[in-house]
Image 1 (tube, rainbow, N blue to C red):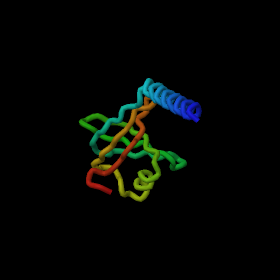
Image 2 (image 1 turned 90 degrees about the horizontal axis):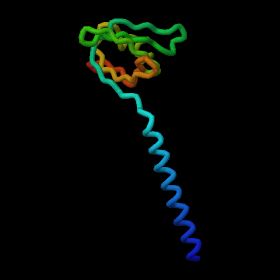
Image 3 (image 1 turned 45 degrees about the vertical axis):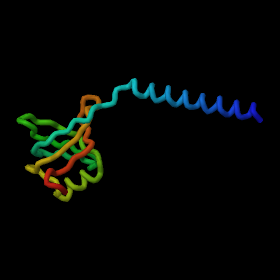
Image 4 (image 1 turned 45 degrees about the horizontal axis):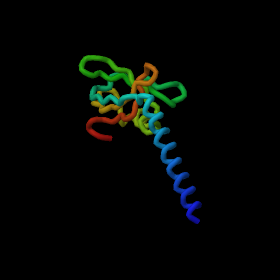
Length: 110
C-alpha cells in the first residue's frame, strides 16, 4: 500500500509539472494587445453575405477601419440601433494587420 501511495504522488507531481510547462509555452507567444478607443462612426461597409462589416471610426482626427464579425453588432447595424454619426466605444485587437473588433458599443448605450 505505501508503494501505491508513492506511485500516485509521483504521478500527480509529474502531471502538475507538465501543466505548468504547457502554460509557460503558451506565454511565449505574445497575445494581441487590446486597444480601446472612443470615436464617431463615419461609415459602415457590410459584406454581401452579411457576416462581417468594416466600420470606419474617426478617432482624434484619424480614420480607423475596424472589422466587425460578431452577430449581435451586425444585427444592430442592420436594424439601425448603431448608425453613422453615433459615438462609439470600441475595443479591438490588431491581428495580421487587420483591426478585429472585440467590443463595439454606442457610448450612450444600446
